[in-house]
Image (cartoon, rainbow, N blue to C red; front, side, top):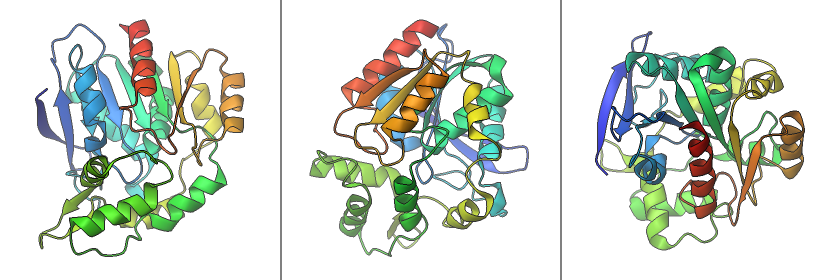
Length: 284
């Protein structure tokens, strides 16, 4: 399925990149996909192609990732700003209501959007993220964000990616590891692969924190909305205990455990695709 690669201008002047899949004239509710902390729109290619046979799908590069501009003020690397950026795109495209699929950080941004713009959000998919985070996952992520050792070629880049994510994706074959690496890395001007995000994100994360307010208050914004939660069976960021607390707070939360996955499912797994399809069937 062909997609369009486009940019728009944020209210503070940055050029932000997005992929636009499917028919903009589809009568079905469109979807926006929001990536994880160090990832970008390319992560959603499989699920976007699947969904775009019927509906429009937008996949955003947050500022400082992928083909979006890096922010000269790293303090803007923050969920509130990302939510503003996403809503500015939704407004620019004249979309009245949208489904949000958010992986990890993208799920926190989805909660922020629901908190600020409940009337515009039709449904939410949270991919391995909740209003509490398991300290094990936080520690692991803190060790690699902005701290990747330099590599000299794609073979070393793939090895670096595998060292960070091997426990999360134990069954990926060599071709899949290459694809996953190329989705999160890009060649610099010297032709050498490097992680496709601004390393200043590490400092911003440490100084500004992950979210601006009580995360459970943000989660409560999802209570009236159709919401699906995907949890990697081996996730070190979203524990079964946190999942149970979320389901107690929102009894109609549809929880799907994605087998043989840690943080975070790739959204091409049969269980993940089926859960997303089921949620969208409710929304239309």
